[in-house]
Amino acid sequence: MADVVKQSGNAVTAFPKVRAVSFADLTWALEAGVADFRKAPAIGLFFGGIYALGGLLILATVFALDVGYLAYPLAAGSVLIGPFVAAGLYEVSREIEAGRKPTFSSVLRTALDQRRRELGWMAFVTIFAFIIWMYQVRLLLALFLGFASFASLQDFAQVLFTTADGLSFLAVGHVIGAALALGLFSITVISFPLLMDRDVDVVTAMITSVQAVLASPGPMILYGLIVVGMLVVGVVPLFLGLLVVLPVLGHTTWHLYRRAVEPPAA
Image 1 (tube, rainbow, N blue to C red):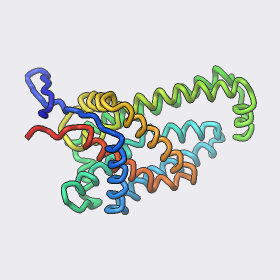
Image 2 (tube, helix red, strand yellow):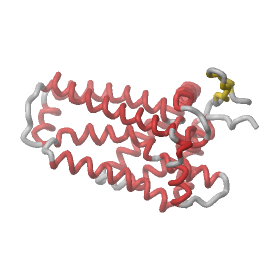
Image 3 (cartoon, rainbow, N blue to C red):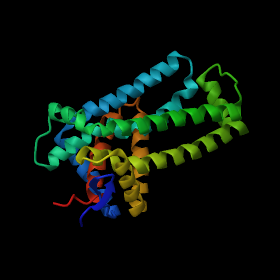
Image 4 (cartoon, one colour):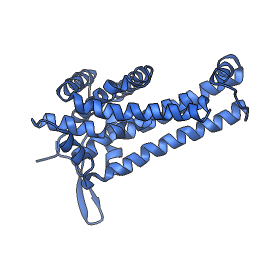
């Protein structure tokens, strides 16, 4: 089916057409993601290493500044910027799909190509979401726990899990965080690979991503939960699991995008 046509001023461009994906498609995408990682493990480990190193630096900074109570929200918030870090992995999958052998130079050159400048706007969106997340954490801390200082991370954890205010903070914070994560997932799950693959603007990419999620809410929500679960598992062993988790998820996202968005009309 041809792409939907949209008009902006005097320019007419093709609006990507989405199609429903099934749970079987999701399973296939996960298997294809693992296969792509096996075909280009060094590049995958490179991008996974960047993500893991960023997490370790954040963790080290938090404890160096004696604000250990921010370790968990910062680690959780880092999930929000994962799609941007994985941008190069979409290019790896695209090259494998085209029958080419991906190299560091080809992947980095494409990821940094000026024609992909729309990715910068998507990066801004993810970073802005991260800022909102951290702001609401500080706001909820003030609302539920006041401006009390904590001598250690252990003291903070004791307040969280043994007091009504602490449990309320956890409950409300996780509800707000889940809503923010769902919203960001909806506008990014398809938009990042779409921007790497086609010459579209960031608004078109985000709208297409939301349409894809709405067209297949069950499989897409399940994939979102898989992403969260795998990232949590990857973060637990000092972020080292992200070396494998991030590339597998990046490749999987590319293949899910391929199933969710029809190819452009010839």
